[in-house]
Image (cartoon, rainbow, N blue to C red; front, side):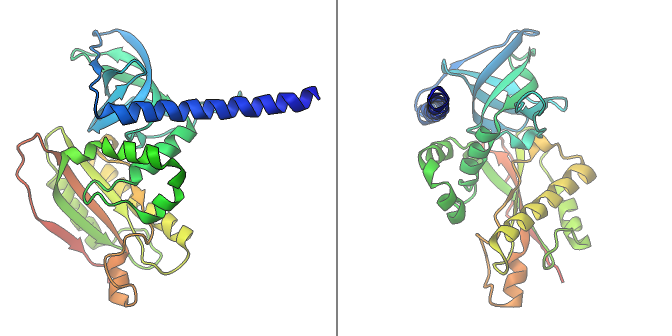
Length: 307
């Protein structure tokens, strides 16, 4: 009997913990938009560890709000160590790059203050479950046309309240699109053609030099084939673009929002024709600049077609 009650109590404790976690996330996200938090100034050289939720991301910095409603500007560097928390004694955390830091993610940051009152992040840790929930809600918000992805919405229906709250505070609403580049892919391929690389070269060359710019990368497929395989293929296409921009043009990963693969959920042409399917096998790259910066908009749209 003791073993049975022990298992029941353990399940109840796990359930309670999950409820508390969701409650904390909802409380922070829902009220963050309406009630300004207290701004924290970190003294230069001061060591600090803060647990909170990301309210907004702005290039190499993000705003972290803790349970006391205090907002801290966190500075990311090339040496910032980003991992999930350890799973048991012998299982270490999984490493991530800065593109994983999306609004709505609950995490713990430790580091030192810099001369501008920001917390210069040395280590960032978060739970794998919190990351999956944050990425799901982040992907639900299209920063350009503000339309939810239907397939992801169906999969994340249970987290609808958290998704809507995260969408309202998406920092990408504060950005303008200044350049769009679309590159195309052959059937079942994720490698870049010479023409695609040329267009990406042009996009990187003309990327803004201002601090507050971002690059958004979205991958897609046509609607033929298995849904899960298409989703994976679209992710690999987006990753190949990110890798090219990072390796060949030294674009810092902190400038690139979380690359997403949408599978066949956002077709732009008729999939019943070969020409239409070719247009749907694509990756869209958007260069975004903070609206507060006086940078002239450009309606230039570059496209590369895969033979």
